[in-house]
Length: 271
Image 1 (cartoon, rainbow, N blue to C red):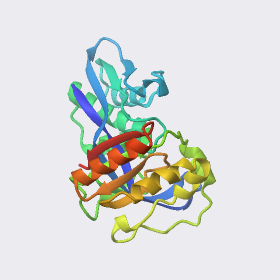
Image 2: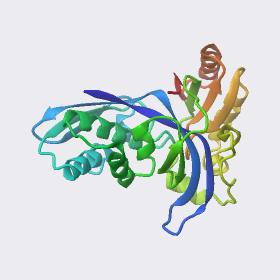
Image 3: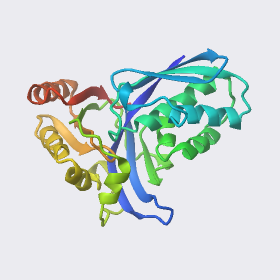
Image 4: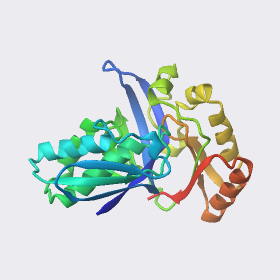
């Protein structure tokens, strides 16, 4: 069995302030690309995890890997006696603002529920996902939703973006989420507006201060013909552009690749 751990993007991300528990109060619009990491699972006598792919070196397959943590949590909650061999084709850059680890864990939950024949309502699985990380519930759903609180209190999105062409660009900077949030000094933008795409990403200034090349990536996307929105995703360093057509997206990708061939890119559509 296999499942795609879709790339997560924050179409808007407002930081409302710091919480007493050390996290930040957020208001964000999650969306997901068609493409991402690929996770496979098959029945096995012991639980194991293997990582391959272009970004495998950035992800060690140790006991603390979020995919294994998700598998162990699922086994414990539903008293599963079976095990599985898990193989991750790591296609998304690490520490990139794309929810890679959270998306991988969410894909693991979806896969193992099928493989182990677990009959559980989504509400229970979302509760389990939230215990693994703030972004895991949204990644489990992998559809456009609004996230509040730590980002794990989910409600339906006010508008659909399904089918929108998107270009993801990472200029090669790895930004730790904790470092970017520590750099954020506020004040926040307040809650998302009625049209969330009219919002912003409050973490962009902090990310650009830590990695100025993020600003260059944003400038190139915003200057691309046909772009309707360009922002940084999450805490960076990946930026994205939404386009009016696939042809305009592909033209922008070719132009950026010609100027910055070392930058990672992914041309896709939102689901």
